[in-house]
Length: 130
Ligand SMILES: [Zn+2]
Image 1: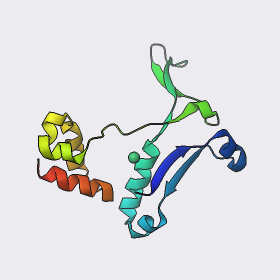
Image 2: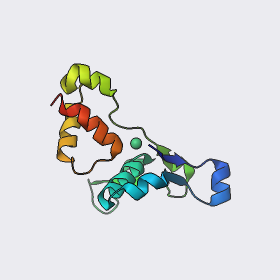
Image 3: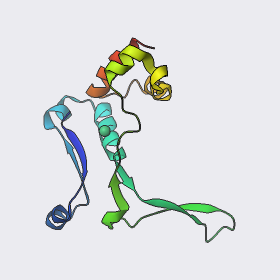
Image 4: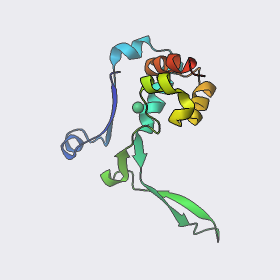
């Protein structure tokens, strides 16, 4: 699909002063509507994960707050894979319920207006099993 989210190596960080790279195919970008571009960037940003943990709120007794790793610490960042991955052949043959991703299908139905090319292909397959 010509896009990739990537955490920089130490060398790349040294050379560019960037922590993360997001590559997008220029030809695909040109063809996308602004909604599709937004969805694409949102998707790719989801691949970046920042270390976080819960701590007691110093201001409010009994309340917990989410604390994030330091933004310029490479160890704070990692790449995460998709929550859901399945072969369209499996969905074709077994349907969504047997593959256990009916929740994902529901999310797709809710977000049908925000799809990229990959999703359109997947959605076409899924339409047959809905
Ligand atoms: Zn992805």
